[in-house]
Image (cartoon, rainbow, N blue to C red):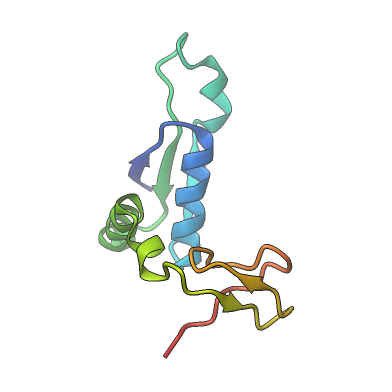
Length: 106
């Protein structure tokens, strides 16, 4: 296990975990259940990857995400979900209606 990110709150940690998992990197959040004690205990949620060999890719993905790179990549490009036909805004990678993933553009 390798620590790749310390979040400000559990939601951010789970968002980063989901990002990594969507890219095929096994990850988990630790410390999110203790966040309620923040202030009394020095606990912030952390994201860990299972394979040290994924560290470089994980750090790159987290860095790109924090800089807003994925959001800018698809800015204002609406797309139609292949699974259910829902029209979605460009910043979304998955369909809110059926959970289908955005298809890669060629």
